[in-house]
Length: 243
Image (cartoon, rainbow, N blue to C red):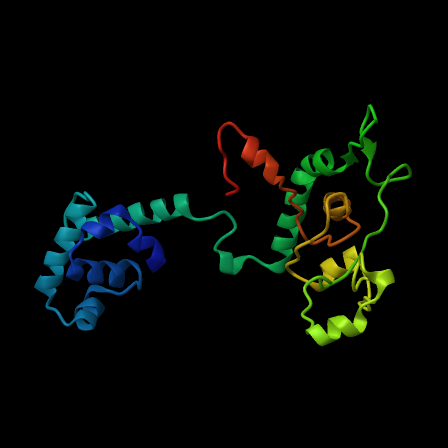
C-alpha cells in the first residue's frame, strides 16, 4: 500500500532524515517501489540503500531484523495515516451533494443565533421589541440606488446651468435619474455589497431582514448568513477580534 506523500513529509521523523534517506523513504512508502526499483531510481547500490534504511528505521525507532523492520514501519505509517485521515476522505473526494448537506447542517446550527440577533427590533418609546418580519412585522421593502448620487463631478459651467433657487437646498437630487432597485435584487446581482445611507435610513434593518430571509429559506437558501455587530467587538472586555 502506498501512502500520500504530503502525509509522509509532514511526519515529525521525516524532518530528521538525511536527503538520501528522504528520497528512499518516499520511493518505498510513497511510491510503493521495491528495493531494486529504488536503487535504479536513485542510482545507488543495494548496500547504500541498506544504509539509508538503517538510518530510517533508527529515526522511526523500529526494532527487529531484515524484512520485519520494513513491515513494522509500514504498519506504523498506516496506523498514523488512519488516525489523521479526514473523515469522508480528502477535499477532492467531496461531492457537490456533500457540500450542500454541510451547508444545510450549518444553517440549522446558526439559525437560533440569527433569529435572536435579527428577528426583532427595539424601537424608541416601546417597552418590548417588535418582530421584524411576519404578520406584525415592521419591515418594508427597501429601494436603493446602485451608485451614490453625491459622487458626481460637474464643471462650473454645468453647475451654473443647472442652478435653480427652488433646488438650492438639495442641489441635484430632484434631477436624479438613476433607477431604484429592490435591496434583495441588488444583493443577488453583486457578490460584494456595501450599504451606504444616513443615520436612520434603514441600513441595519435591511441587513437584519436579509439575514432572516436567508435563514428562513426564503432567499439564497444555499448560503449561510452571519450577522456580525462591530460594536460588540469594541465593547468586549476580552478584546476579541473578528477572526
